[in-house]
Length: 488
Image (cartoon, rainbow, N blue to C red; front, side):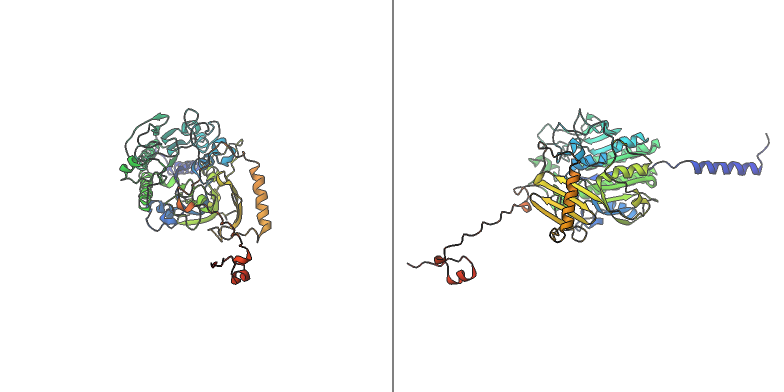
């Protein structure tokens, strides 16, 4: 057999290079990390002053930080409904409770979801952590697009007992796929352990993957990694007689440590450069959270109940160390990640969210948004249009410029009545396209006996004006109601 000529060698080399160039790059892996009840300023890269979050900060250093990111709701299950469907939660029965509690409502298994659409595009899909979209047998992550699940179904569990009630109750809520399991350990650490293992398994299989890592931290009960005795003491998971800023710091920094382990696992597996990593929260912060520069907390449609941190890293595609003023919301992640993965939404269920991919990867100019919220407790309503926000709480109505006035202090409704009335009309038109509020669905709100800063204000009764003969001459002159002393 004759040896190859130089021309044949060059031709073969050129063909190989051309073939490699024509081979499409594998779609990016996606790691979506969501904290629970983390406030806007609870990360050091967003300004938390009393502790640091170096691993999450590293994501911001390597990616883009959103300065105007919103949750779809000020409580968890409603936001999770919007996240997984890409649509306003008010379109589904499961999205009406605030939050979901008990059986009877669940995410319909037939509804397309972010994991089911990515699975259809060839992704492996795993959820680790909190589900909170319904209970077996009607609902589970495996019925809505995830191949694997390790975590809990309900809205909260104890960090050590993994129960949805206190230690003495029979409320174990730790699952592997659809089988209840037992495993000792601090929940934040266990979720990190499982995430590291899943990343390694997908990398060895050389399969593109979507990993949802939904921490329960820093949701109550207020238990840091050394607080196992506290899990035996508490008499309710809501834990209104526990917690402190120091405990909260330990909970958040432990979560940050596990995020660091996840990032290291991506590096070790050699897949970090082709992995989109998102870190965010499901709603605004609660008792010990820092929501500066906003007012309001969880369960409220003030900015502090809705604004959340959001960070995205994709090396080589998203500018490192950048920020964006683009207004985003939880339901945007479905169209965004489908676009980045080369997948498509189901045309029968068009997303209400929009793709943020142009802003993330092509430095597109931010676009103005119209976003809507409602919350049954205290008859709360809100709409953001550009920089302006309409807000209603019970019978009180407001118009704020939330860019110039993030604390929501200057009520502009009388100065800009045309804007105020237009936003009300647009809100009413949008609301008419959603499911009506369900009178049987719960809606959580904090009460004055739970949190001292939620005190109720009752205007003082107007003083009864005494008859003139009982008033001093000075009081009769200036209209005050000072009563003269009578002499015997």
